[in-house]
Length: 162
Image (tube, rainbow, N blue to C red; front, side, top):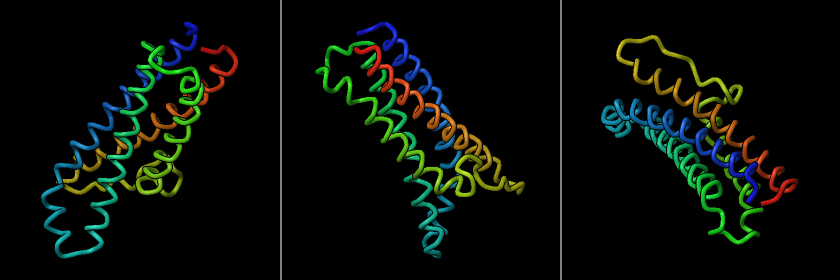
């Protein structure tokens, strides 16, 4: 494998690690309201739907970042475990996976522009929610950068080769 591609994949792993940090922060901050939201969901179907969407979008982001991290680490450190067809197919597949995940998360958290996450509600006892929103905004940015890094890896694999 070319050292250029190793550097690309290891940089992807670092970027994904940064995203994992923010994803973790968002999930932890949102869990502050989990018990209260579950109680409210018993009385309101809409609250139940919002809770479900919150959980699924945060899980989607976290799992996508984890998958990207593991793939990029494996490709950067031990690419010989894959046949050459997988080496060339993995980056374009990851572009699609990350694109779909980012779209899913932004459709719920940032429906207006795909980047800015909701209105920051300056009410007492919602500080953790606002922190979760900021962390989710950062996760969306990271997912976009990860997506572009897989595009770069796809092009690099085609031009430089493994």
